[in-house]
Length: 231
Image (cartoon, rainbow, N blue to C red; front, side, top):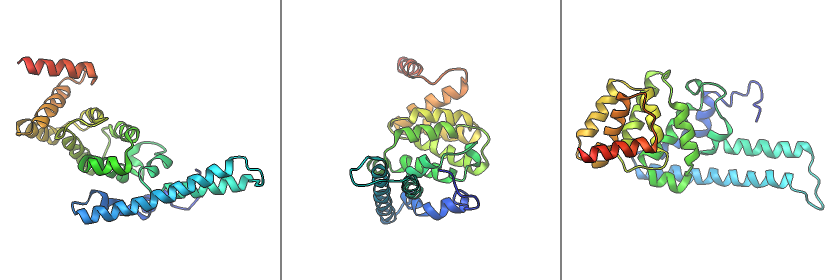
């Protein structure tokens, strides 16, 4: 969708106006999360209705003739509905350049934090493994400000604390991009914890950080894991 000049819909204020409610998805209060999930369900319903209108505008019908302007209007209505829903907003308004200057960055981080903190709710209401993978890869860059770097360190820490979930392996890219004292301190604490998953995953990430030339492949993981079990 080409935005109207001067509309401001893709600046920070525009994203916040459309999606501020989504912060409830990562709230510690179950009632607040439930309210946000209700809002998400409503937004998803609007997206699906708009999608059907787009489909109808393009399908041949015996007694209906849709003009180009009708199709454009249906597509514009869909884009507007999608901009108010997750993860659809992250699909329909991709960053035009570097992700660190993208107005949608806070909501990309929110989407990943939701998956990290409340994986079952995320899976039930907004499962999108490809979106998770794409966002993590785009975020794996070193030129973030301190606030974003802190959030990325949090995400890596959350990922190593739990049993492996689809695309979690991508967080190694982020760990390498934001490597530093804070991240390594978190990983060492996880490695000393009583959480067996945290011990295993943090140990692997720390080893990869010390060996930046080694690719993070399944073969490397299995070889490293076999080595730890024979020590």
